[in-house]
Length: 131
Image 1 (tube, rainbow, N blue to C red):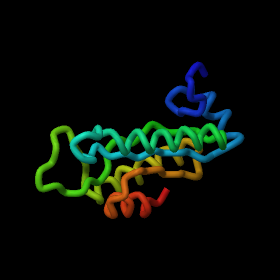
Image 2: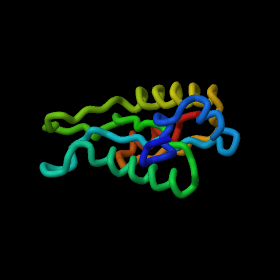
Image 3: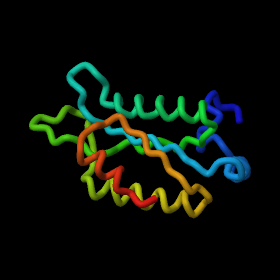
Image 4: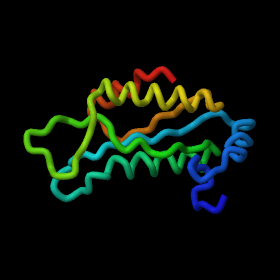
């Protein structure tokens, strides 16, 4: 591939993914949240951290990295900042089960979910997926 991140799934063709799966069937999946982290940090902060951790692990262990799931479960705020967005725990859980089932059908058999958001319902939704 021509990407600066050679393990990014979205930069690979299906034959390249199939070839990689003969060596490694794991998939790293960063999961972020568009949430408020104070008045100065961008709402993308947890997404950037999860992506960077995933990219580092992908490079170090030669594991493919899935595209980032950019929305998760947010802490309810009395005064939400503009641009924040999220979903309910049940919705994230269902989304992740559907996506992992699809990737499992295409040959992956181990999923490593990475998040930098420590809100308990967000973490619980990810911890309870069945992929």
